[in-house]
Length: 185
Image (cartoon, rainbow, N blue to C red; front, top):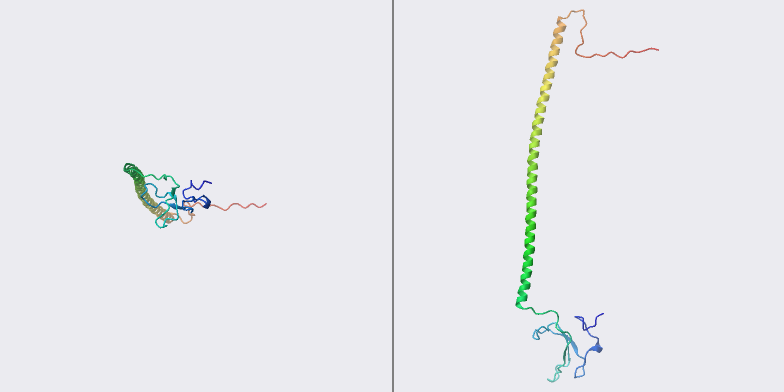
């Protein structure tokens, strides 16, 4: 634990308070006045009997040396402010650079998506054309099959008219299978 004199807000015990010429224990006070340069915020002891018929005790004992809070010269102040501005400017420029890079990446992605959309549109058009060709070919094959059926039917009718009555008709168009033989054992 640090002694009370070294702590910024340290308060001494009652028995360590100095006595003034009047015989009273001094009060611990903090300087609020700006007149003693660079002493604002410093602690000091002062006699409590300060209104005794204009015969005030003159005890005033400083506890703290000057606090590290030093006054800056104008050059130091402007230098510190300029450094802060430079830092803020560098941060802002870095952020702008990152934003530009993100915009470039996003633009590339948008272009890539647009190309993919165009490729998909071309593929869809190709598939639609192939589907139409397939349907046309299927319809053509069905027509060809119907025409062949009609031709075979006409041939069968014409051959049955010209054939003799005693002969059995020939089955050339259909493959007729016989039931399997039954063996008795």
